[in-house]
Length: 187
Image (cartoon, rainbow, N blue to C red; front, side, top):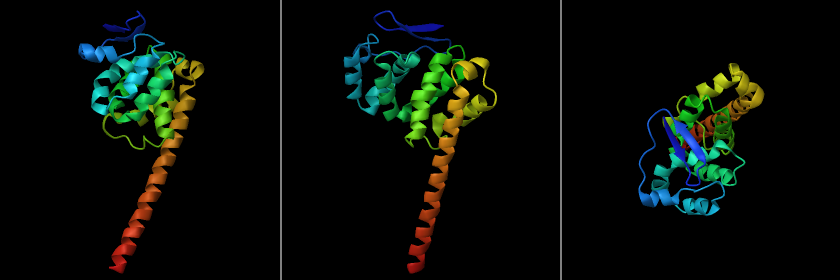
């Protein structure tokens, strides 16, 4: 078991699987030191993809309580770099069964928003399996997932939005094929 604490002593995450990757002292200085460390979020916002990537696993635990002042800005920052989130989000949704609060906030503030923004259309790469977990939440949610967090309702909404996005993409693909056929006919 591995626990990660902010420098102010706030417990951020406990992991039973592989420990967090090692960070350099410079990277550690970029991380928030507490739930009010908005300057750290500003510093993180200025990082490029490669600089932010090793820090993501340390940032997701700040979504364990969306009422913390830095939680929403961190969620927004992470959504901008959604390509690096797949495995970590899937780990939270599938492995953190004892932390439905965190799972709910990751579902609502990462997955739902990515689908609404049209960023998540298919299950590519590390996002593979997301639809299966969403379908499980719709069909057979636990008592806590259903009654305390409405995760089944959120999953239903995500799947509906996802299917609508896929249908839009299919229509665009059909239109593109028609244009190509028209261009070929002219040639």
